[in-house]
Figure (cartoon, rainbow, N blue to C red):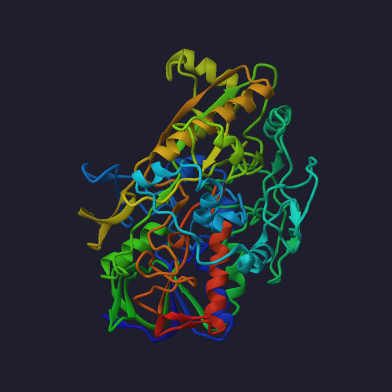
Length: 584
């Protein structure tokens, strides 16, 4: 085994969770090595030459690692045998931030204090008993929105996120076609540029929402809409609206990612190095400290990389899997409280117009937050007891509807093959809309990640096993949100609407959180407020694994924010690398 030169900081993975912290610690003068299991793909060599290939990137998943490198299995309960499931997050420099859609949100103020908020609203109503019966494990975050607001701002101006502000210093802006979300948390600074323009799909959704008295807005997007230079001095061109976006690397470097927004600044530093096709298989530790990692290179040779600080910057499943395989369980807290979104569906076609949903990126979209978080608390209290739920969902109008993405979605009375289906598909592809329904699920004791004893990768590391089922809160929420989506499309003039109100569990859906949640108490959390593992103080966990609760919004901007938050704590001595309970 080859032992590599010791580094101050060893980062495992290079996606949204790793980009900011690895750059900031290198800028602080520390020697930083990033070990990324995937290949280095670039705008010039890979995406400019081959991005417009749905079969290559979306259907065949060329950026995905495959079961031989990142296996995972899934079951709904401990009574079932877990079976192999698809892993849909990229293994490449930049991680999933290379192929994501770019929808980019700050969390609500109340998203950081879900437990406190629901107790304030419903604690005296007798409506919360069912959560205890379902073993919901809701905790407030150990951090507040006010504390992390500057780090959200830093992410927006270094990485590149555009939008219309809805709330600057508490002033709610009026909701006009070119302005923002009235429900958003207050910000100190405007977005650096405006969001993507609207297309026919967006304007149709907006029409229906306005008819119902809702407050639609254009969602914030991490896609440059003009030639723009970040606070790091990196200049990128504006979006060309090519539509080959989600599941694709951006041919124009307009879609913000750790690859194009942060890595160029990091690689200007002599003390930063990224080593690709370096597959980490173990965290080596002794006397409560990580001492080194073991990794396998592309030739199959085994290496040891020693360091002082270790940061897990891979995706949720891989961070949890690596800790468990290395015998790090943080007092039994690693793997617990897994959260991802159940699926519901509302789709429609319009006889009187073309929507041209293929014409533009997926996040070229309008949305409503009227039913998100606790924005309709009074209305929910009017529901029957067996229909009441906590939290809510964002509803929006995605685009990028290519034939290979859309072909399986059709009304129940249309046969999904043969001449009848060809005629239906030909007539309706450009008249079709399917809503995005981002429900906020809760953490539960019986939803978790552990190691599967029956499946391993090619290096002998056990697969991540996901145990995840839908509970009554999400079932009730799904029915309610489904019906609101139907109402919006009816008001917009849809001729045919179909879908599924039954919330369906899934192993992974790109918003996969929990497994190493942060908290104030080592008895019910894995890390402290700075993402530092309680039982292993020189180990930090990046990404969505540390989230105690979810949100009705996409988590990527919050993952970037947490990476800046973590790096600030390390740089400024807010953490004690010998004692995770000693922090300021």
